[in-house]
Image (tube, rainbow over all chains, first blue to last red; front, side, top):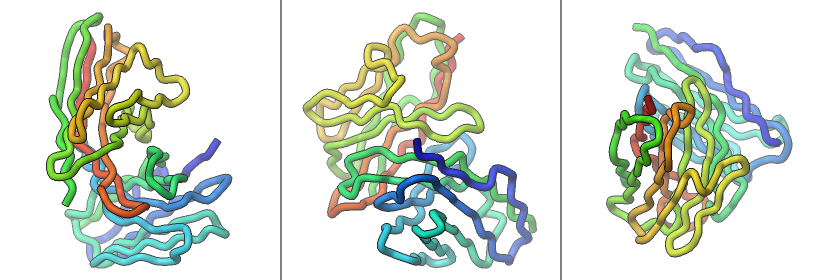
Length: 114
Length: 117
């Protein structure tokens, strides 16, 4: 079965630096990959989506890369702020039409220290 | 943007009680909604896919008679946990896919914290 691995340990980054989070998967590549932010006791909030034929996507301070050869996605937050502290989830979809649910990683807890 | 509302946000009840959770897409129609469960420090696990006007599709290991799903309209799906027991205590979250072309993101409700005593 598909396994998704994210940095299991908390990631501590100093404010203003770039935070880089990793998502690795096994087996076959997904049709697309999504990154979500989850705060304690809340549902995930969508951040970015990248398709299997795309290498990179950007949105404001966020950047996602997708390497199907390495079976890896990297999620970057530049000029990080304490408000960026949260758990970030990587999710894969194998259905191009979106008819299937997502397969999630456990998430990486990011702490931005002032 | 697409907004998904979930109600109630928290339920505490006795063992043996049945609990209904509602999931609504507020500003768009969703032919498909999804139900997930999340245990502490674990990933979200897909339980079932809710299809408007037809039966839900359950993931392996999820009891369909235990977790009843009804998707009677394009904006509402309900999950009923029947005869809930302490092991059903978890964080239940629904989602709906944005309308539009393929590969649209899913948008999530804020979850329901279910505690069975």
